[in-house]
Length: 283
Ligand code: FAD
Image (tube, rainbow, N blue to C red; front, side, top):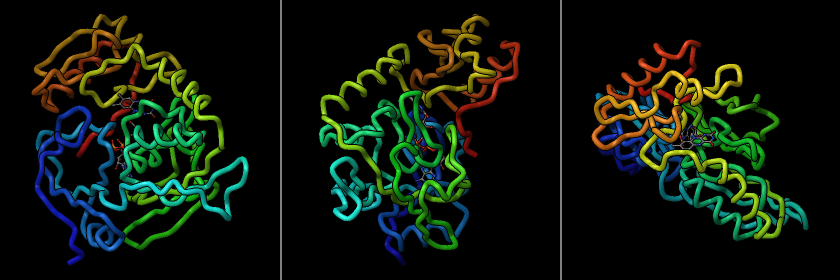
């Protein structure tokens, strides 16, 4: 009815791990299509950079933002911007974060460059307030547009209970668009801060991965515990605990979600302390 494109597709195509079975994917490019997509049980897919999707796929509709909901209007709003601050137009939840960060750098707009290297989409990064010690998504938000089956509303960050890697939004709250609040800065200064934040990623593997597997228990790096358990370089099927960094599981090609789960179980069994998963598991 609304004209949303709907296709059964392997989710492996949409995850940075490159694992995941089929689901009905709804490509929604406007609010009418999004409203229709939310009429039955759904999941929202961003950059797929924090997901381990089962080989069996998921039974729910999977929503993917496209078209205008994956475009960024970075024009400063003249009523809300001044010599120091810029409030942008709408930036779609489906916009890839890395490209946005590069554009903001060129425009000399600061506040989000600390998130450099996070292969998320804007909506997914906002939903969990992704970031590093050099900055997080909520450091650059002015307004969020949230869509649920009940309708669309706009909120400001101070209306949400956000915090460390938490937006205060519930599952199923779709971040359809946001407006950014940025600080004017010289492009070369933004660049320097980006390069600095990027340095911290030097030891991370460059292969297909959903990022860190476990949270750091009590501030101890999970990667070190995994290393001390002698597990770096362990392989099960097509999945490998990265030799470079124990907290990264990579897909050597042809990994199944079963392989990844087997490695996660092995780590839990061998590391002496309880570990909390960083990835989200689908279903
Ligand atoms: P997905 O993985 O697609 O989904 C994750 C969750 O967000 C799901 O619950 C999903 O439903 C929800 N979601 C996605 N889009 C929306 C939307 N539009 N509206 C509402 N909910 C949505 N994270 C960090 O915080 N810091 C890092 O430094 C970091 N480094 C990483 C490095 C690598 C190499 C990788 C692969 C991952 C890294 N991550 C990091 C993890 C990951 O990028 C973040 O968790 C990110 O926020 C996930 O965003 P996504 O768009 O990929 O979401």
